[in-house]
Image 1: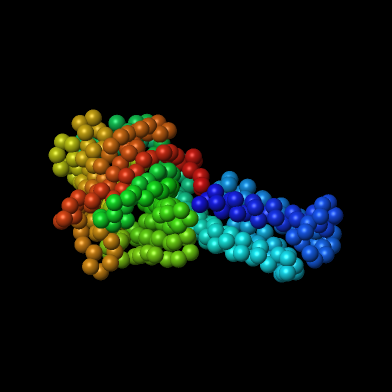
Image 2: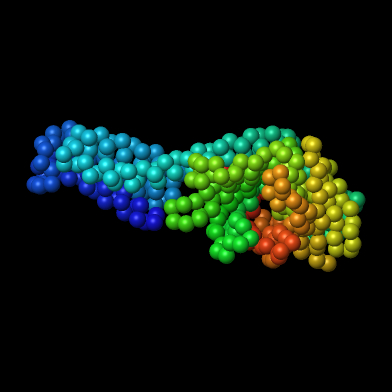
Length: 368
């Protein structure tokens, strides 16, 4: 469908060249019966160029292609109105292109708001030299947690105070769904003042997609889902269930930020030789979960009793993140493939499969 849109934009743009050809008497144009001055001819040429530029920007997936498209449509429609008898059917093409331009505009605004929030989150980080993680700092941790941090390669390196994690995702929206939706996502973390912002684009069908943003800030959570970045499907924030659930998500994801385990907001308790419970209290919210590790120190899973949803009737179910592979990014070994599962009364529902494609730490972090 994307290529169909590109074809429509290109063809519509090329048709505008007829006005230029007639105005400058380059060749007879029988389809255009009204006289066209050279000034108008130049405008027809500009419209053609603008549409072709729009197609190129769209093909290159520029976030700003909507702006070029909007200018092209405005110029085109002015010409169509001025030469209505000959050009009125061009309105149909403009109306075909317009929804895609609007969707791209709303998507741009959604990304811009994410950028604003990330810059605000990172801007709050205290400006100080990062501490070096040493074995001494691990002394009071349960042995499986200390073993995990050593295994990750964190010892001897500067603490992670911010991070960026790129993800390729397959997900299901409800247990009865059979097909998997494909998505890409990027998540930004602040560690000294624990927070994250996660943004995803999920393709539901050709030309139909939704944007999602999860946010954890000051111990409070927020979840937003918008169709094309314009129409709100979900907007949940600042209630006990979503605050606790979002904190538990942050807690489970510190496996990508090993030094975050040393944050004073997190209290550790040994469960057995290969497991430890983490309890995090930040702001007015408390959440906990149990980490399970291999004897070598790699994560096996993270389990938590978590609210499934934020509605009044939402109930707690066991939520499990299971690691399936590990990779080293910038010297730090982390789980690179994970799946998330809800243990429901009827059956287990694995709703998320995720592969980590890139991890950046500290000064490497940059907006996408």
